[in-house]
Length: 416
Ligand code: LLP
Image (cartoon, rainbow, N blue to C red; front, side):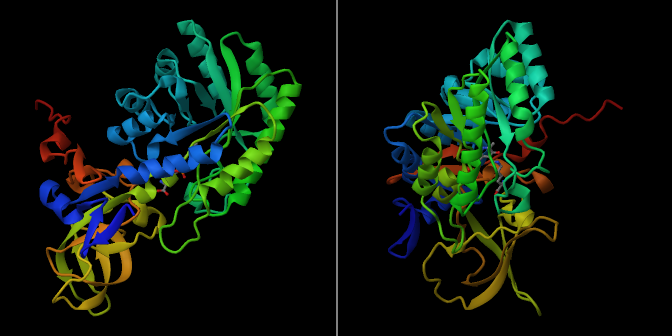
């Protein structure tokens, strides 16, 4: 598949990761074009014959090459900032397929989105509705909006990535929705065109996701009976992937449920997946710096750290670790914690892994295509990794490694 051993060497498509590491150095994120495209098509195939839009969630992996790939496939985009809008436009994305979510949109971000002519602003509070109305009036536009509804459904995922419960900061309570739609419809600078929800990320079970879709569809019916016509229903993203041994339910099971909920209604169905498109289409290649045996733990100190891949430190997430040579001759197999150089005890990338490795060996942290580079930082003044896109037998550098100077060019020492 996208990452497999060929003649004992782990490859991205047909390119050995060893060769990529030699050319571009480590740490290095490597993505598979075929993998991304196949995952995107799993959605479009599930929608076959229905009015639908796959709005790729940019936050999962916002590299311009990935966005350009999506744009070429005809995808829309789910964005959460003016920065993400700028990326989508720079990558050739169609603004008329952009949905802008997020609870804290600034005046400037709203203005930029309206001027760019995006498809829809997903409004998450009454105060935001006021603000969007004000900006639209000031610049003489009519703002297409949807309300993001909080359906009060437990997504049964990690609490940090669960968003659909009443106590969550996201979305508008169902009980307020009808009143807010009527209010919006009365205002000449607002145009309610849709409704949306998103209950959380990394969902293994389609049941809560489908239940949320049903709730939103029912609410859409009530809103339309009140005299407001909607053209789309957005059921969010959040479909999980396999990191370890989780049972991965096919995307089609989720989509079939949403289509069932929609029934014969004429609305366009929108989904905004991120992880399920890019997650398993990416790995992070690292080099072993030191082997550090100890009384209670053995450590492999590698050149990737929590600033490159935050998920294990932040969520206790599990990423598979594979050696880049299928068999490492000469090194004894031991159980290691794989740790980075950052000065935090949380800087552990993987715990208790049996591996044979020596200093200089290369390892791949698997399933790093989503929320890897996009959540990276420069903590400890570490330059961010290079990014490479494998495409058949070719490997394209899609982001060069940051230089150390870039990290402080914006900083100013006062003229004391
Ligand atoms: N739509 C909305 C409104 C969202 O907030 C999100 C993700 C998505 C779509 C895409 O969800 P996905 O299909 O990727 O699950 N950093 C965490 C995940 C945070 C997700 C935030 N919202 C992680 O690394 O697990």
